[in-house]
Length: 233
Image (tube, rainbow, N blue to C red; front, side, top):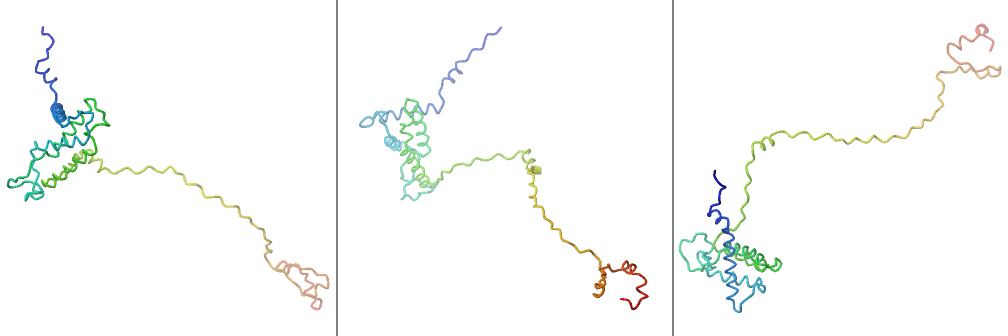
C-alpha cells in the first residue's frame, strides 16, 4: 500500500520563490534606499518628495543604454542611424515609467500613505511625459497606444445579422374619439301648402262667395246651372 504523496523539494522552492516582478521591485527599492543614504545631506523616507524622485531619475541616466540624439546630431529623428554618433546614453522612457510604478507600489507596502506617495506626484508625471515626447522626437519613434483588435464575428452572429428583423409590435395606443358636436337646433318654418287656389273675380266677394281651391275638384264643385246661365254672375 502506497502512502500519501509527499511534496517534492523543488515544488516547495518554486512556491516560495518570488515572481520576477516582486524580485525587480525589491531591487529597485533597495537602490532607492541606497540613493537616500548616499545623499548629501542624507534623506529620510518620510521627508522624501517629488523633487527628490526627479533627482533619482536623473541620477539613473548615467546607467542608461538607450541612445538619445541631440538636436544638432545629423541622426536626430532617425529611427535607425547608419553610423555611430557621440550622443549620450539615457534611460529609456519605458524603463523609467515601469520603475516609477514599482517604487510607487513598494512605498505603500513599506507603510507609506497613498496621499503622501512621492512617486505619484504631479511633477513626476509631467517629467515622464516630457521624457517620452523628447525621446520620441529625437529617436524618430512614435509612442502610440495599440488599438485592441476585435475578434471576427462568428457564424451565429453573421446569421443573426442576415436574418430580417421582426416587425415592430403594434401600438397599443387607442385613438381618442372625435369631439362630440353640439346638437343642431332646427327651426321649424311654415311651409306653404303645395298647390294653387282659384281666385274669382273681385266682384264675387260682394255676393258672399268664398275662396275655392282650383283644379279639377273645384271644377266639379261648380253647379251646372252656372254654365247655363250665361248672364248670371
